[in-house]
Image (tube, rainbow, N blue to C red; front, side, top):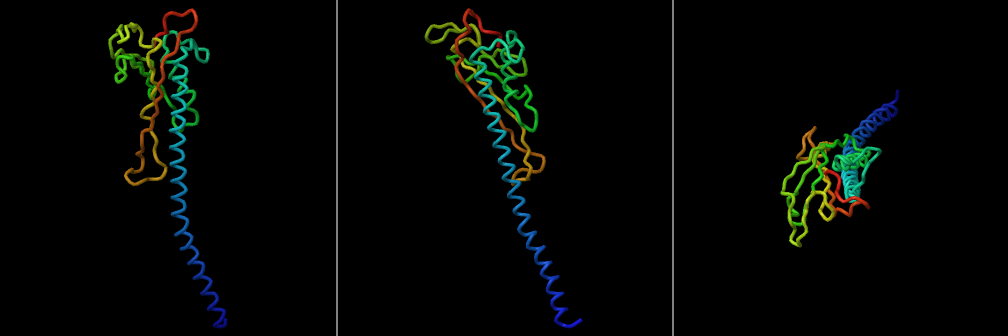
Length: 196
């Protein structure tokens, strides 16, 4: 083999080695950036889904729906509200159970502390009922028209795909959302709201 052919063969193998090094220097950071974009996009999608689901739960609450998907809401309005939130939280990687959903009822006297809190089908009275508002109106029920309802999803876990600074593998963040509105009027012919 001539000297010229040996130089060409050695040059080609060193070019192949350079190509592998260059590819690794480009592909690794590019892969991290791509996975980071996917990761953040998925977290934004989850947050948006939770926000939309809580809005739908609040819409259902203010209309005093008597049933949802064929199930009666007469015994527990909060259970139906939680089901509405769960059914509207589609596409989440981990199921949104009723344990993540809380329904809070407020009166105009205290918009900071709920008068009743409902979670996972159990409602707990936190305030005093009946109570008289500053305008003289008597509030007998936590979910009486004119009161405030807040639907909250809290503590939904999200683990990052790509380890980030400050987070180790397997740890993540808790996502949540809330929606609040004034309870509307009762259905025609109804004088008492359903059980919260």
